[in-house]
Amino acid sequence: MSFSKPNRSAATITTTRVDPAPISGICVTCLDGCEGPCEIGRSALKGREMIYPQPFGKITAGAEKDYPVDFSHFNIQGTCVGAVGVKADPDVAVFPAVDCSSRAGRDGSLQLDFPVVSGALGSTDIARINWEDVAAGAAICGILVVVGENVCGMDPQAEFKNGRLVHSPEMERRVKAFKRWYQGKGGLIVQANVEDTMLGVPEFVIQKLGVEIFELKWGQGAKDIGGEVKLPTLERALQLKERGYIVLPDP
Ligand code: SF4
Image (tube, rainbow, N blue to C red; front, side, top):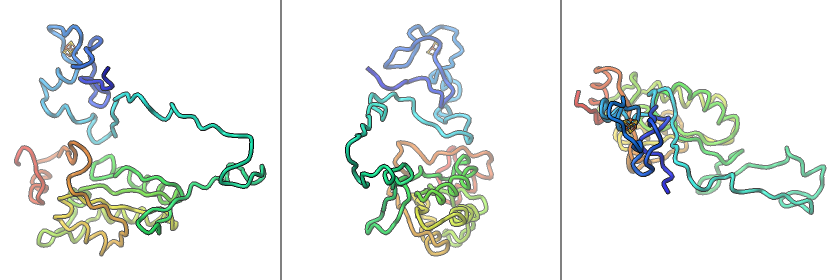
């Protein structure tokens, strides 16, 4: 039994004509003349572009893989006898008294109001456009929020000196948005991948922007693919090529 749904996904705006064979995802009767709304049909026309979730730059995408276990399979069974973690007193054991605070970091000095870390919001349009809201929410709630990879390298206004970053309005905006609402709990994490490290992003955010929590990545990321973006103009392609990124096709 397959938990995956090959050859069709809401993320790529594809579907099959009739029920598919589970392993291949191809329609049980693949029809001569079908215009091909599935991933195979679309990729025959558009090639590798089909792997981009659509519409590009407007959405965040999740997988449709149907895992056989999820949180709905667990129940939290309460008890009417006694209490654990709080005084057994109905006037004390009230809902607002629930303490979800936590600590993180090697020495536990990083205080959190709630033990949550956001996904990394990197250089994509969807992350850039929504950053201020996410950062403000994280700061107010006392959780960790992450600036993802390539924010400085993809910043059209970024300035470099001898190949090292000296100015990035986009990264400065992101740090400022978090600090504006920061109330002493939670924190801002900045990631650096290979290209960020090469451009000097760690030194820039730590020394110039006062970032205190940092994630150094040894590869591009935890994804099988990743760091892929579409560039709208030849000028942007040339700019990123000059900054050391792999740009395909070679502009
Ligand atoms: S081409 Fe049409 S019939 Fe064939 S697998 Fe794709 S959707 Fe189904």
